[in-house]
Amino acid sequence: MGKVLVFTPKSTDAKQNFSDYIEAAKSLPFIRTAQFSWDEAKWDLAGLAKPERPNIPPRLNFKGLEGLFGEFSRAFTAHRIAETFGAPKQIGRYNKPIARLRDLAKCAAELGIFHPSDLSLEAFDKTAIEIAAKSKSDYSNAQMTTVLLWVYQALDAAALFHVPFDWDPPITTTKAQRRRINADKPGRPLTSREIEIVAIAFRNSQTQAERLITSILALTCCAPMRINEVLNLPVDCEVLPDPGEGFRGGLRWRPSKGGRPQVKFVPEAMMPVAQEALQRIKDVTKPARNAIHKHIEGSI
Image 1 (cartoon, one colour):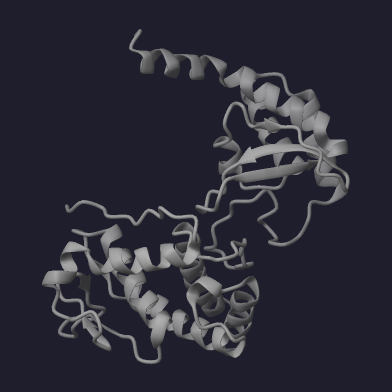
Image 2 (cartoon, helix red, strand yellow; image 1 turned 30 degrees about the horizontal axis):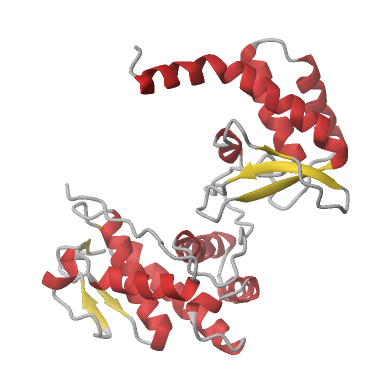
């Protein structure tokens, strides 16, 4: 098994990160010994990817991806190979994103966007709409939209967007990951009855497990986010700025998809609930946190 190689952005300038992303891809060790040259329109991934069928070489075709989108497509592929280097994956892991990158580059050009760092929410939404229009089924649409989401996540994680944004398309399929509190029907807010049930459970919780779980649910109602993001909140996450417009405070929050750390604001009316939920979480997790601190300090 080879070493996993993951690109880490070092600049706050998106276009500098873009240049670094390309150069880092070109410098990956396997690029020098691969059976293709960087600028070739077709890459032979023999030894780096598994073929879909026996006796058919695992090849990629970058036709239709020119200029900076072509450079990004090659770098995206190289970094994706590096993520699992030493354990070759099926060629579909690489050629499916290339197809979606063609769709994205086409829609971006129609919007006057020719640099991947200038991609916008509008560009991804437009691409998703066109994908849906040509899909033969909901399942096909979900599969292709998921691959487009991979592309967005790679750009976002590498800090390549000049203006960062969240893009979380509704992907409705039985195999779709369900991460949000209302993910059974993506895009649907909780009903009054569902919120009431969460509130009752939060108020009546007694055991440590009940207090922890209901506090997490309460926080997702105060400031909607993924449950795993609640679990990653720092212990000193509270902030009390005064942004106005009905907000009074918030949480220091790090998006799970690699976005920049920021403040997740809480409506003023929900601040007491958020503070109570946070205090409960701190109380329940204090023994574990203390044990970790002692272990780090070498006292046990």
